[in-house]
Amino acid sequence: MVSKIHAFFIAPAPGAGLLLVDCGSTNGTCVNGVPLREGDRVELLDGDRLDFGGTPPFAYLTAEGLHRYLPLLARRLGVLAG
Image (cartoon, rainbow, N blue to C red; front, side):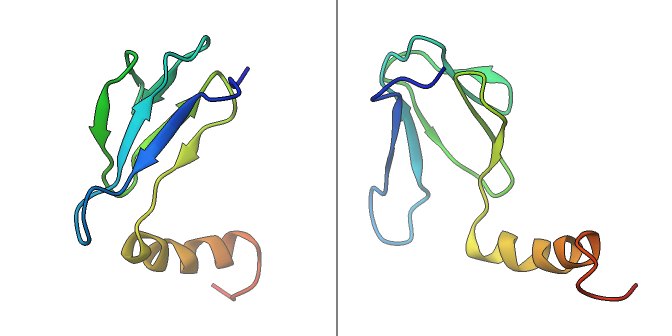
């Protein structure tokens, strides 16, 4: 479902947002349900949903977003009480 060279990420400059670029993949790349065309560059935002060729979705999280999400994940996994 995912092409050998499906999409890639670009870090344009320190402190700038990460970009996602589709490489003309056969089964597509989507950000938040919106399909990308070959060569489209999309700046990723904290919490964006990424779909690569029909695989289970990924969430793009910045370090801050991951830090906010970890307590919820720990509760779901039963690591923390409450």
